[in-house]
Structures are given as structure tokens and as C-alpha cells.
Amino acid sequence: MIIKNLNKNFLVNLLLVLSIFLLDRISKIYVIYLDGRLNDEKIYSSKFLDIQLIWNEGVAFGLFSINETFFYNILTFVIILIILFVFYLLVRSNGFEKFALLMIFCGAIGNLYDRIIYKAVPDFIDFHVGNFHWFIFNIADVFITLGVFSMILLEIFVKGNKN
Image (cartoon, one colour):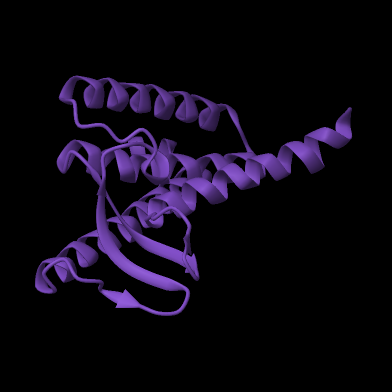
């Protein structure tokens, strides 16, 4: 009975959520595994890219990293509220906006999972040029960033032209 009530869009969205979540989980599990085998050395290093595990206790890209358990729990609670708000927007959206919000939602769920299970988020992708290093991030952060960038483009080029 329940299966009959599910529409095609719901199944496609669910498949996207599961795919992004699994891609993020598998990449993090693999990097954690390699880090353990290499005794905290760089997993991969090149002229512009390093793969090295760091544990992020803050929010996106290590911002607001804190050691206090109370503040960490408050920050996690705020992140949960933001995820619920994104979910609310997701349910009310359609088209490209829904796709962008799905990417944000999936990435946020992946990082929230890590915050709950590990009490930190494993970040490992380090792009750099010379001595300038961008923030170290993970696959979930990539999807969050793509979703936010897509929402900005949507606002500028689609919704901006309606005014």
C-alpha cells in the first residue's frame, strides 16, 4: 500500500540522497582506514593536492572549532535546526531549486552523522598552490558547496530576472 503512494520523484530524490550519503561515508571510511595504516602520514601528496586526515570539531572547513563539550553540543543542535530548515525548504521546492537543496541536505546529513558518531568530522582533501592552502574538506562539503553555489546562481539568473 505504501509503495503505491510513492511517486517517481520521491524515489529519484531518495536514490540521490542515499548515493551522496554512501559516497561520502565510503570515502571517509577509506581515508580513516588508510590513515591508520600509514600512522598519520599523508595518504597522497602532489603539487596541488594532498590527502591527509584531520578531525574537524567545528563547522564547515574547520570554522569555530571548539573543545568544550557543552558548546560542541550546542553547535550540533544548531546544525540540526539548520538541517531541519533546509529539509522544510526542500519539501516546498521543485525543479533545480530542489536539486540544489538536496545536495546541501545530503552533505549536511553526512557531516551530522560524523559529528554524532565520531564527535568530529573527518576532512581530508587539501588543495594548495605553493604555501597557500585552502580549507581542508570532504565529499559532503563538496556537495554542500555545490548546492549553495547552485542556489546563488538560481537567485541571480532565474529569480533575479523575474523582478
